[in-house]
Image (cartoon, rainbow, N blue to C red; front, side, top):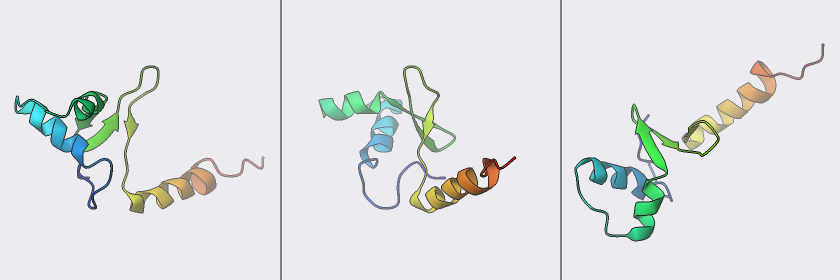
Length: 81
């Protein structure tokens, strides 16, 4: 999965900012600089850091329906027993 979304949305500047920081460049926009500090890229996947939660992975829109279907119908099911 690619860290940069296909269409421009609110996530687009975050991976670019992270790449700039790894190259040693400064981010001129202070708000973006603070926002980028809350994210990390692991194996080309974008995650948000939390204080008391595990890393939260961002997924593309095409995976959202699959994940929701797996959680509600297959993995967790309806728990009839």
